[in-house]
Length: 166
Image (cartoon, rainbow, N blue to C red; front, side):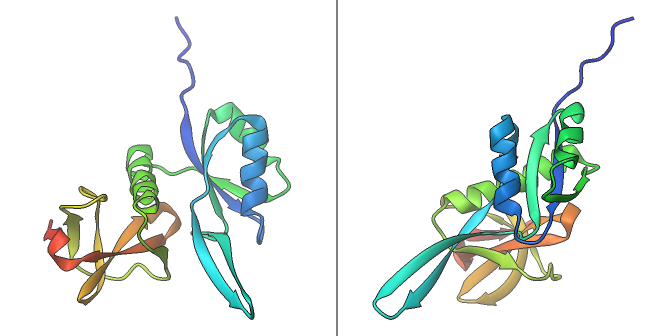
């Protein structure tokens, strides 16, 4: 009888406070595929303007590794715990939505709460095909892209005419 080969799985590294970039560096050093979504935070000081890149989901780094590699990640001193999403396909799709939104050059920010609203799909523009829920509607609509497994969401602003109900 042939032993099945292990396949890559998505995991969520819940990090110690302000350790997301250290965990990402740990993954890079070991060649682990990881995703740390960052957003720009602009600070204006007298005479200068600084841009910082902060984690979109504070306290979380997403990685795709083999189960035996997950044990090594658990041993990283910057990881508080390692979680495994039950529905790998849905989680991967939600992460891809976040990645596409970040590449769209639109403002993406943490949505503090996943609120109830209408489910929509973006029908045009660089984020065409992404689905989410409407957070707010005032000229420009904020669509929430959810990561259900960690109870977090990111909001992206799109024109109302770019949306259709799902």
